Length: 584
DNA sequence: GCCGTTTTCGGCCCGACTGTTTTCAGTCG
Ligand SMILES: Nc1nc2c(ncn2[C@H]2C[C@H](O)[C@@H](COP(=O)(O)OP(=O)(O)OP(=O)(O)O)O2)c(=O)[nH]1
Ligand SMILES: [Mg+2]
Ligand SMILES: [Mg+2]
Ligand SMILES: [Zn+2]
Image 1 (cartoon, helix red, strand yellow):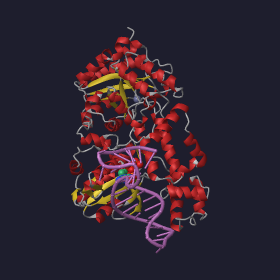
Image 2: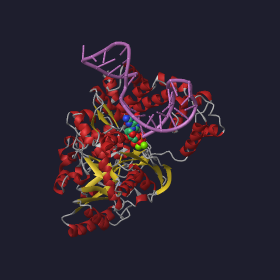
Image 3: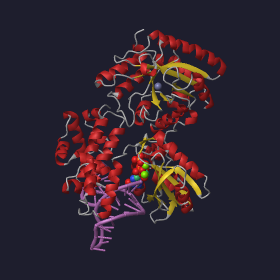
């Protein structure tokens, strides 16, 4: 699956260039849907190409199959090269400006040669836009405003930042009598790893009261809009929060619409259309326009002979058909998590003492906690020498006596060295209850070497869990170059579990890879990677990511009670396919 | 550009807002 993402990006780039050409929107959508389907595909696109089966991918027909084949074989696509010569690719930035879509972006670079936000702002300030067909004074002013705003802040928010803010707003408004129902919606409700904007839905018979309360919340720094249906504010942390206000009897259909994703909405509405009915944010309607349902999501899905679809699955990745066939997964829930498998203390780079971490874990209702401080080569994190590691074990033994039946397990987050060896000798690894291995150095190496490096680490028979397998840091560091597909194969072979690290800027393994991992029978370890007691709450983001990967409790290692976890730790390497091939 | 036993051509989700509009294109969620 090495090149699936690459092909998806290629098709998305073409779609953007076609937008700039102001091409037929359906043709553009064909490229973007094909790209999304290829990204989520659970088979290797090169394999499909070799077998001449590319057109079996949904959204890929003769024309796209030929283009993909050319690209995979030659590393280039003639059509794309021509487009790039024809259209200034950097002008795609213009499409980011609210108020500018394909038609206006096309006019801007065609008539005025504008290709950057900077140039756009300048042209607007010099009043060069108002004379373009379809433009005018007001639009020019708006574009100047939006362009200036965009030059400051464009990044998407981390889920772990945005959702708590949204929940504060929700909690504050829930106390108002006029508010009959309220939920975070959009990508927040779907628990997507990053969030474009904070969308909240309210059901009420008294919109004025709700809007009034909303714009007077203590977190409000600035009121951006005060309409009765779509008020909007800026918080003190400069986060924009949009409220959407609807009548209570339309709450379900509005929530369904506003939760999305767009792709889920389109697919669902297309299915409804094929039945001769209609679905919108106002409800589900039959062929006579009679409203069949609108109050709850459950009613709407039920009338479509579907099970209710958890928001995390609403990405048009097969959930609609699964709901129809009543084979949706029973997604893992946070209360099913019985312990944390990855946490740090002040013995390395954590902020809190081991005892405090343990008390916090107990307070969360856990049965066990894996203490996994860093290994010696990570000097910036004060990695533990073998002596300190053994001293920590003594402490754990003592504390365990006091906190029984709660159980502290000693683990370590062991650095995978650049040659794939591990940062503690085997006899030390053998003394640990849990060995997590992860890459923390020498990120910049050829994909083949990085892949071999990690697989070599997994081959070590003491290894239990592979930590943050892509190394990405959302909004700041790309994943390192690695053939994750091969790594998953190795993990499956050796019986190694894979972590879904819950740090808000990691969420690593990413959601679509979780699905690929569990399909291979790999166990998932949901972890907080907490560096303080508070960060044990990161478990929430880990579980959310696992849910987006269609994971059930049985796929998650730490839904097991302590005895079963211990049993797994003792036997998983022996039972693995790779065990027979291991040298003694 | 894709798709289909109602269609191999003509659809492709649906609704709302804005402003430049003289009847609606463009954009957005
Ligand atoms: N039916 C329909 N619904 C849409 C469309 N665009 C957006 N929506 C719905 C589904 C989205 O989840 C919801 C909110 O729109 P957003 O643009 O905020 O998208 P979303 O929150 O999913 O992602 P984001 O993280 O904000 O980029 O509105 C559309 O073209 N058609
Ligand atoms: Mg929004
Ligand atoms: Mg949104
Ligand atoms: Zn860690």
